[in-house]
Every structure is written in C-alpha cells, then in structure tokens.
Picture 1 (tube, rainbow, N blue to C red):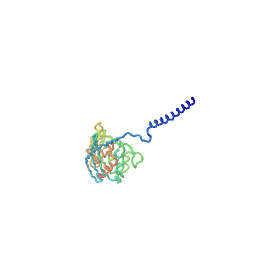
Picture 2: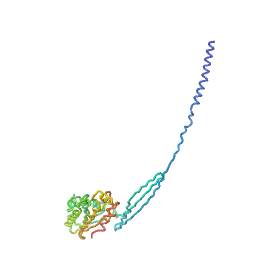
Picture 3: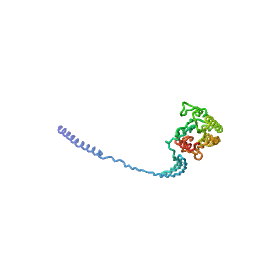
Picture 4: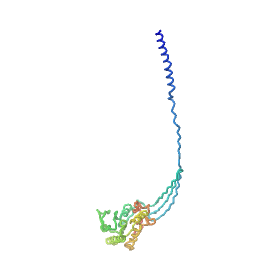
Length: 302
C-alpha cells in the first residue's frame, strides 16, 4: 500500500510539472514585444522663413574734363545711397565714393628733358622715379628742404658717391633748372623760406648764368588733410601753402626766373584731389607723375 501511494505521488508530481512549465513559457512569450516592427519616430515639421530685402540705389555723377595736348583728365565724383528694407526690420546705409576716370599719357613713352636739372624733395623723387623722363639730372632727396639743399651731399645718378648741388651745377651746362621745395619747411617762417629760395637761385646763376630757373609752386594737400591740420593748428594746410606760393611767385622776374603754378594739374576747389593723392594727403599717387611730366613738357621754357 505504501509503495502504491509513493508511486502515485510521483506520478502526480510529474504530471503537475508537465502542465505548469509550458503554461509559464506561453505567458512569457505573450509579454515580449515584436522585434521585427520599427519604432515610430515623433513627427517633425520644418518651417523655413525667407526675408526679402529691397535695395534702392541712387547715383549722382559730376564730371570735370581737362584737356591737354598730352591727354585728357576726367574726374567723376559719384555719390551712392542704398536703402535696405527687410520685411522684419528696416536698415538704412549710405556710402559716398569717388571714382576717377583718367586718360594718362602713354606710360611706355619717355619724354626727354635734355640739359635740365630738377631740384626738390620727395615729390621730385616721385617725378624722377615715375614720371618717365629721360636725359634729365635730378638733385632730389626725401626730406630735403630749402634749409639744407645748397649744403647737403646726396647720391645723384651719374656721379660717384654723394655730391653737393654745387658739384652738380659745375658738371655740365644746364638750360633749365626746376625747383620745388617748401613742404618740409612749411612750419617755419615763410619769408625766410623765400629768402633761401633766392639763395638757391643765386647759386644756380653763379654757376649757370645762362640757365632759366623755373620756380614750381608748392603742391597743395587734400581737403581732408587741410581740415585736420587746421583743427590741430598744424602747418600742412593750404592756407600756409598759398601764402608761401605768393612769396615764391614774387621771385620771378619774367626772364631768368620764371614761376610755374603746378596746382591746376591736381586741384579741386583749391585742394589736392583726393583721388590723385597718396594716403598721407600730401603726396600724389605714382601714376599721376605722368600728368606732371606732361604739364612740364607743354609748358617748356623756350
């Protein structure tokens, strides 16, 4: 009887396990999410907004033309205003620009100035380097002035080492001697500068009695530079330059000493044109020395 009960118990236990385990596996399988279906992404909406800007441009042009035998110089001043008005905000900008259209003499053509001596400072150095002249002698150096031009020794093409102006004047016969100084010493006494000019002229005629001396006017500075100098009580302004030129013009006698006003070449309203000027407002741009050269060529002293 005990054996039968023991066998029956074991039979029921095995039967119970056979029913419970598959049922548990079936429940676990029902709990799992399907792995072959994609997970939904949240919906995304992209909005692009385009802002349209309207630009209005107005240009006012003024043209001035100067015609010479060597070419035509045309200056155009253009003022441009632009309004930009986006739909979200309003923005206004304005700009002023100067455009210069210049017909220069042939840059490949050299103009001969035989038996000619040029005396001057950095502006004359520019004429030497960029003016495309030939056969001329240049006694010029950056920073030189009427104060020291008769005593200072400098390098001059065609001479060994440094030489003085007197040495150059002794070297050959000159028919014409051009002088432009004054800007470096403009802060000094103007009457004293004119007196020193006279000493230069006297030195030239002592060594070259038949030479004609041409006193070139000192070039103006730009309106901007003039205004800046006036504001700080500086000396590089056109008022002083005009005063000096008046005194220099008085040195001319109409025969052996002539005065040549150079400012009409580059002036606008009594000032050096901004588009012809270098960044300092005192010197001119390299290409404008061709205009200078042609002006001298047209106004040769016969």
